[in-house]
Image (tube, rainbow, N blue to C red; front, side, top):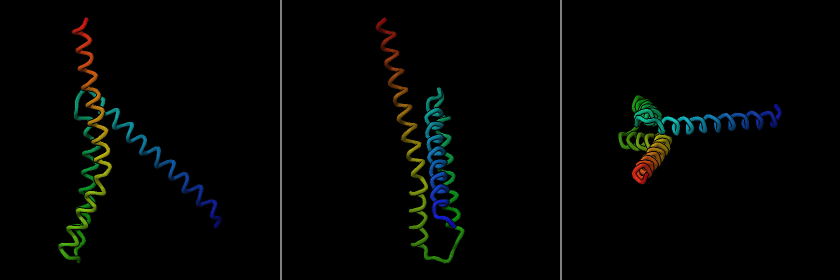
Length: 112
């Protein structure tokens, strides 16, 4: 098999992954800008549920010591919640900016 064929396949996968991540970030920003605070918490909640599924799948496999299982669960939980932390950071940043803009609008209305 030609090695250049694999390069194009890998490049295509990377580009698709970048679009998926960018779309997820854009969706999080869009949901965080809504009037209600709850839509912006949907994606972080889904990420936490996904990480819990990963933990339960580890707990289902036995055969290792209790200490190594707990360590593995902790590491998997932390690694799988990196997207959750990023999405929550986006959420709180957008909500804080929205709150500041709302206060500025109130001050401008009072000035008139």
